[in-house]
Image (cartoon, rainbow, N blue to C red; front, side, top):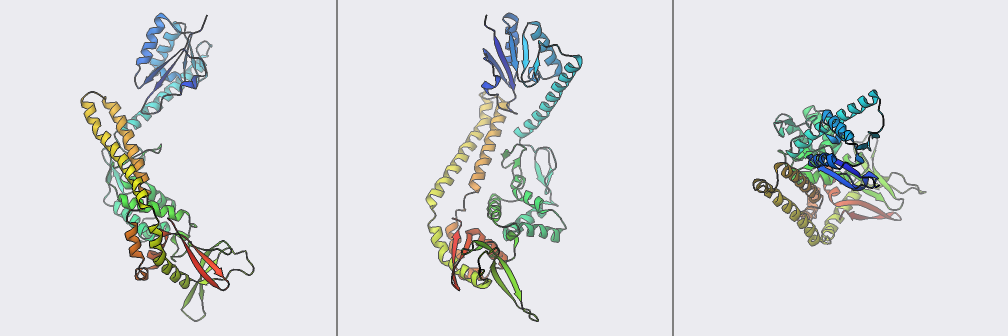
Length: 432
């Protein structure tokens, strides 16, 4: 006689995907699977009255009901029908004799699981409404009824922090600026979290990494956010303190002869106010060591080569291909937005129930946020016009060292010194 073995699983679509059909490890005759409701469980209980299976597999006993009482009642009913219940994740089998203490511990586990599920369901329902997650509100905002709202006393501080970072591309400098101007002392780590926090961009992020765009008033624009991301990516390739170094060439110049980065050294003469700056290889292993080169000479040659070579480098960028990528992403965003706008009508006509529509809207909005993030990583579309402006020598002469540092790192990946005896030349490697 063949044993009849069935399985039952309950999945809340707000919390998790349905389990893998191969998870049971047994040859299953039938799987009863509920998504949100309990209709399949009711069908299982009805069929057990006429043709009960020998075994019922579940992952956890808590899936048999929303309360401990419901779980207990259904266990008693199924056992009375002669069904052996096996909970795979709890090493439970209804045929075994369980001590009162063991049963009490099992019921406590079930109760804790259901309490945790109810809390997570509450958070999931909040996500469907795009309401902020629990926890501390980011500096610069207050918690409103269903979204973050700007704190008029602190949001200007955050805005000023971002503007300072965008202007000077220095995280440590922006942190020092806040402390000096506003008396707001934060760590460099906190400053980094501010720069990447989606909340300041008008988006809401949840603990599992999903982001919903345009949920509240942003402190920085999308263009500013894209600029911040480019600066962070560029600074990540530099030595930690080089990103905020006062000299514009710091961290960019390498010696091809000894394959070493260079550092800016300052030389003064006793009883004289004048100082001399040199670029010296930091870790030269050659004998004799590679000579230091006057900083101003390298800077002058760099500006000259940028003015001459940058337009040619940008002319080699395949803008039609770049435009095609941007258009594809923009079209995908538009399609998702169009579907999102159709959902209220589908609810009114009865095609979708309200809960399913909310879940679909949530998924669409997270997909739109992901596509917008991809779009923001692409180079700005006005590269040719920017190249035309920065190809004028006077443009560079009118800048401060920190402003010059910003523009050089916007276009240059590195500058290599090529030595020819006592003479030397530069080769500039652009980022595109």
